[in-house]
Image (cartoon, rainbow, N blue to C red):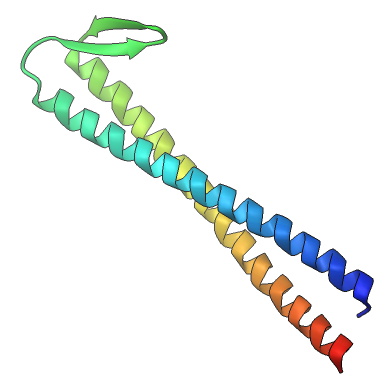
Length: 112
C-alpha cells in the first residue's frame, strides 16, 4: 500500500467517524423522544379530567382513548427509528473496525 492509498483510507475513516457520531446523536434524540412519549402516555392514562393534544399549531380537546392511541403510535415510530439508526450505527462500526485494521496494516507496510 502506498502513501496515497493510506491517505485516502484515513480520509474515509474520518468521514466514517463523523457518520457514526451523527448516528449516535440521532439515536439519543429518538430515545429521548420515545421516553417523552412513554411519560406522556402515563400522564394521559392517569388523567381524570379533560385531555388536550397538540395537533399542528393548535391545542385541542380530544377523547382520552384518542390521545392514548396517538401517543402510543408516536412512541412506536420513535422505537422503530431507534432500531433503524442502531442497525446503521452497528454496520458503520464494523466498517470502521475493518478500515482501522487496513490503515494499521498500511502504516506497518510503509514503515517496514
